Amino acid sequence: MLILGIETSCDETGVALYDSEQGLLAHALFSQIDMHADYGGVVPELASRDHVRKLLPLCDQVLADAGRIRGDIEGITYTAGPGLVGALMVGGSVAHALGFALGVPVLGVHHMEGHLLAPMLEDNPPAFPFVALLVSGGHTQLVLVNGIGEYEMLGESVDDAAGEAFDKTAKMLGLDYPGGPRVAALAENGTEGRYRFPRPMTDRPGLDFSFSGLKTFTLNTVSAAEKAGGLDDQTRADIALAFEAAVVDTLTIKCRRALEQTCSKRLVIAGGVSANKRLRAGMEKMADKLGAGVFYARPEFCTDNGAMIAYAGCQRMKAGQRDGDRIVAVPRWPM
Ligand code: KG4
Ligand code: ZN
Image (cartoon, rainbow, N blue to C red):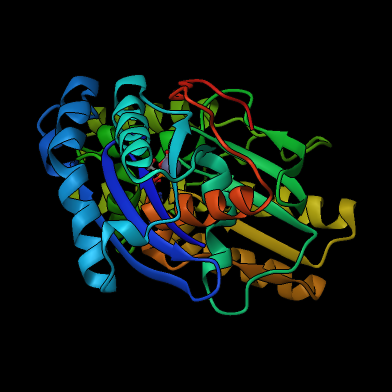
């Protein structure tokens, strides 16, 4: 089955062609980051308009790259939520219009299920069951994955997502949006041990997270440094490192607990923050001690992309799921 996957939930227009027998054939992404950078974050209306401009050209590009034509497409899947409603509507409308014109089935899929299954696109994908840490700009969740659609929530953030904390920390340090990769780059020059940030909710049992206190701790540290004579480059790097180390430690501690609690030997990390090198290294070290394996997607498939939506949608379409006539766009949607 040849599936066209469409992702437009936020500020990346992603399209991919996935074949259930041959695997991923082509993928293309247009990032709107430069357009939103002047505003310090995503402007929903601008995002929708740009998806309108880019989506069909990207569809043609992946078809050309794969040496296929529109008539070869056997199913279309798109991100139905969660996300910005206008942006979701663009992907859903194009998916349904194309599906109607080509006479092929259409299915809206959950964006976080896309992230969760993205490591399946790599060589040596994990077997079910596994524990998954979903860490993106909007979500921080620990999930026991028994199969496609068989998800048991083990824990989640009671306030901010880890990616959101990265983005806010970046702002405090004068870095551009999106902050995660920029905080990580700045932290490379940081001095170990100059600052020690808290590891929230690790001193009590359970698998939930909280990152809003860490954000406040960062703000207070930045303010104190400013008062004490200025926020020089070294101090900014030291704060970035202390923040990153605190997030990585916190996530690693909870993942270790989740692996122990479920007696699982496989850990998937997925979503934008799973591209973080320090996080990957921390997880590998922890899992090594437990004799467990860590699985993640290549960096470009950690952040938003069309390939994960094509893959997740293909699995669900193979199980017979279809949308019907209605375009589905669900801004808030628990997995
Ligand atoms: O999964 P994603 O692309 O979009 C959502 O579904 O939210 O995740 C975006 C988030 C942003 O908060 C971004 O700052 C963060 O992932 N991120 C990173 C890194 N790359 C992206 N955070 C830390 N280190 C990175 N290398
Ligand atoms: Zn995402």
